[in-house]
Image 1 (cartoon, rainbow, N blue to C red):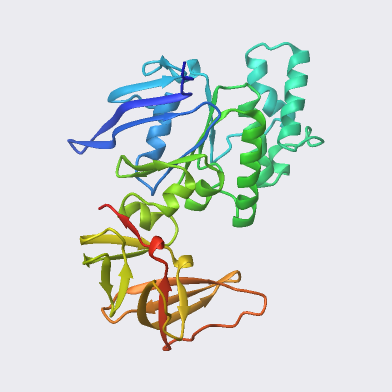
Image 2: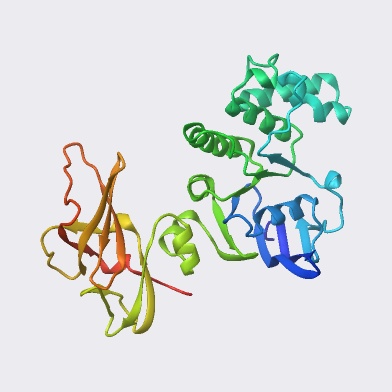
Length: 355
């Protein structure tokens, strides 16, 4: 017998009345989230991802459709009766309480025996690496430490699923990147289903087992990080996830003419749109040989970014292609602004996508 999903959405729709008109924030989402999975809802502001999470939590009622938690229909069940907890970007810690009391708060409310509270709070503080800071107040802690307290408080109640709404948005870049790794470690250690809402593609790619890329109230693509990055289903996904070069035209015999050059698109003829990632492209001052896509251009911009150099290359037809070149220990710039160059990449790196 197949294991029940931790969370299921069955054709869930959310409508609002705005200025006398019905607006659909979520337009019929159907998906399943497995037990113990780290699942991300990813998309730009206003795409419906937070509304979707709030319907899972019970803070919003679906206009239509069904929400199930571990096989049970909870569509009409209030939030406090659902076995999920939510962590917000604001942390919502009690400022007058110590770390220990913040984490123990939910257990005390449920009248859990004192000995069990001590054990569970101690274990959770160890998992989030806050042992020894039990007596501190939130104001005495960094943003990252406050986030760990909020996580411990949510997890100590042993929910079946944890919902996280942009929880790292208030942190600086370096701390946010460190917390991404920590969140994934904590999730693996506690084994609880995590549902994570973010507009940050890097966060989603770093942490997720699977990602639902949302746009305008719909899921445009659902899959693993590598699948979504390497094989985007639509032009929106290709453009939203990382940096991508989108090329379109009419292919004949598996060849797409682009800017005075050729792009190999095996088994594709007629109108076609392809994407090629910047790191897949080689930039050279000499025309390459071999069975590869080859496009001539002129360097419009060169930006040194530490681990790699970004080139913006203008083509004869007015299009522009971005190239990322890894910087080796003794690397020098391949070309400068205004230099003529050749771009090349292997046929399998031109991925044909839908609309």
